[in-house]
Amino acid sequence: MTTHSSAAIEVHDLVKRYGDKAALDGVSFDVPRGTVCGLLGPNGAGKTTAVRILTTLTEADAGVASVAGIDVAADPAGVRRRIGLAAQDATVDGLLTGRENLTMIGELHHLGRRTSQARADELLAQFDLVDAGGRLAKTYSGGMRRRLDLAATLVARPEILFLDEPTTGLDPRARNELWDVLETLVGDGATILLTTQYLEEADRLADDIVVVDRGRVIARGDARGLKRQVGGAQAFVTVVDPARLGAVADMMARITGAEPGIDPEGRSVTVPTEGGPRVISQLADALADEDVEVEDIGLRQPSLDDVFLTLTGEHIADDAPVEVP
Ligand code: ATP
Image 1 (cartoon, rainbow, N blue to C red):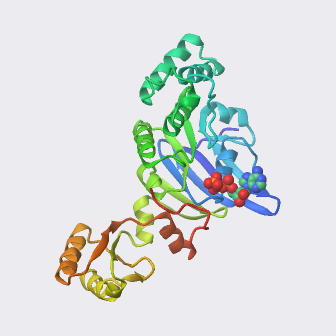
Image 2 (image 1 turned 30 degrees about the horizontal axis):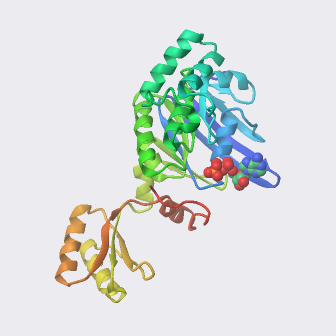
Image 3 (image 1 turned 90 degrees about the vertical axis):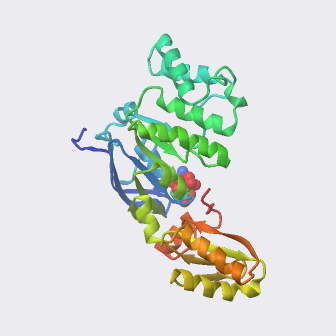
């Protein structure tokens, strides 16, 4: 069943239950062609479940989903021909080299041996794996492995890509390298649905962000809009002597005109500000004038935890990572 829609992905009132727990509890969103949608949420929010339904690995209990205009329940094979999936568990074979992995996938897609080898070499170059291409994949670092995973999803030039937490578990450097690669794909006009626990990742890569929590969509917008909802950037000062916290809060209130929050345990004061570095330089001067010993000072963007706190009034569960890398 094909619909004539400009959306690459359409999801309407999707429900998926495991026992009496709803992993998805009426989720709706759409992804226009040529855009990147970031499905953002903590562990257990339902992100992987949504991806599994859209990639035909599991069926919804209720609701409708279409990918490339094809209903996922009515024609799963048709959907599978149009998509690429980089799942959380690596799909590449550690006992084959990077090049062999990519070539094999090409052959599975009936590209023919020669075309598959050429495509493998092209992808190894694109993902900066030329030197590693002859080594067994099990010897790759985490970041290289993720790049190979991503390359594997692109062998058959899919129309729509699903990336499930592409950078979770990577160190900051590997994460940045992968973001560079993904940015190139995005720049080339790919349609991508990516799931992530990191606001910064969604911010950097996604045109549109859908925030999910406990199986429901709790907010949607671009990164700037979401950050505005949580009050934008914050200036913070961490002092050496907690006795100075009150004085610093007064200073920050005077400079920003906003109401600061004091965290006695963290010995820090935080205040929302749109003033950017100018506010920090005024603060630094005032702190120096009053001889306040400072451990840390700066501007920070809202974290995923800030977004959740503002939208739901609750912190993310303790087992979920809340830091923005
Ligand atoms: P994560 O970052 O941990 O992958 P997620 O947002 O992708 O989180 P899901 O994996 O979609 O979340 O899980 C949503 C909820 O459904 C969770 O509470 C999870 O425990 C539950 N769940 C998912 N798959 C199953 C399953 N096969 N059987 C039982 N419960 C499941």
